[in-house]
Length: 88
Image 1 (cartoon, rainbow, N blue to C red):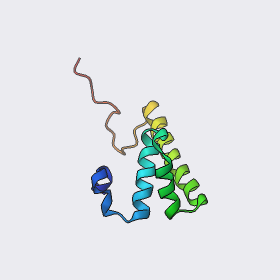
Image 2: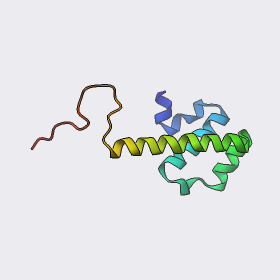
Image 3: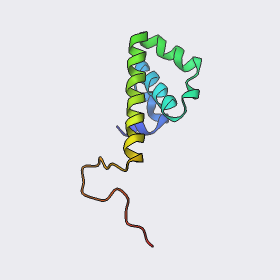
Image 4: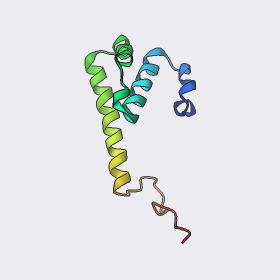
């Protein structure tokens, strides 16, 4: 799991998973960074319906993260407040 946080470690994954990780990272940070090269790499490993499904999952996860953050919904499973008390 730690390798997911470090792009340099993505070589530990097989080529299809690495292509999906690059695609998801680009899509999640700035969808304009999903270049033809990135998309061509996805097409080497996934069918169009599979790419659509991956895109939907990444997009919905991104939406859900932004939605819950904006509404300050704590999904941590703890009783801790969303934000730590301020030092004011």
